[in-house]
Image (cartoon, rainbow, N blue to C red):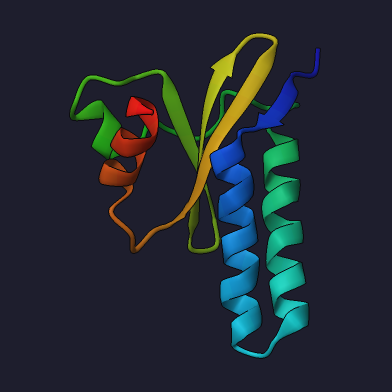
Length: 107
């Protein structure tokens, strides 16, 4: 039974920021392609929601409810809450993922 994938507001803002960042380099097609790839990866969670792994930053603080999949340089952070999958963020791997997630979870 497929799950419903819901992108939270922060994840939508992340996708928009990724598009703007890549677009700023002058490559509109690359920006569109990256957004398409990310959206497809998020949608694919509906059929296989238990793939991925717990982010190290979260397991270190005892948070085991969240998982991640990697798409290119981006980490898609999500929570499986049957029958839904909540996507919390799409964060570039070079950023401080632990701090970003802590900030988002406290709000």
